[in-house]
Image (cartoon, rainbow, N blue to C red; front, side):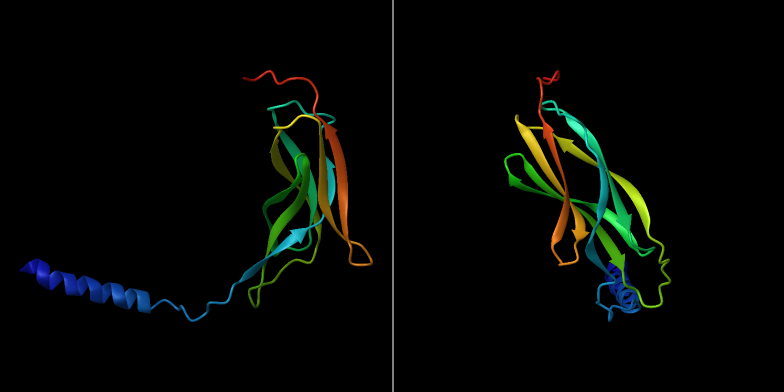
Length: 147
């Protein structure tokens, strides 16, 4: 009997709690953007089945843009296009520093093919609005020592 009286009270309290939250604003407060790469610390060679930490230096354009990760697209067996992905906050009234800074993020890469890898890191747009890339060729040498 107490249970039957208690359950409606729980639902009433829960309903009031949820209705007190403002859910009217469903506009996103950020968007994703590509960040320009200015340098990559690429090894001279890879070994098969090894994983490498590759330091990528990119430009953070202001204080409201944050690193989200890497978008690595396989365009061929050993060809990769890499974009540094950021998110830019768009909250009204948000004060963002306008200072740009170079930031280093580490991308892990696992070597699974022999031959030579070709990397293209997105570096921005040129004066004709064409994409510009930093390109690196890295040969795979020897055999891995891991089994």
